[in-house]
Length: 115
Image (cartoon, rainbow, N blue to C red; front, side):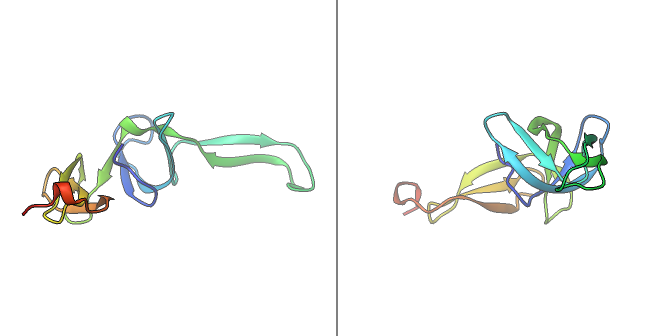
């Protein structure tokens, strides 16, 4: 999964299709992510010391990672990402549309460095 916390993503399927938001949490085992302002539900809570008012709380729920695309900072489009090795041997994510680097995945390794 090439999506990380604090990435900007766009929802491509479901009720919130077309919405862009920041990734709050990533659950790699379940293949789900939480996006700010997407897939909001009402949670009914009872009055307590922690929540003296009670009532309905609106909160985000996870969405499938396959239903979102990463938004490239360089071209501003929602795009698929790939992985490539740089000349120093480090691995990075890149935008499939414009080819710009999106962020580093792994530190440099000598075996992948170009001589």
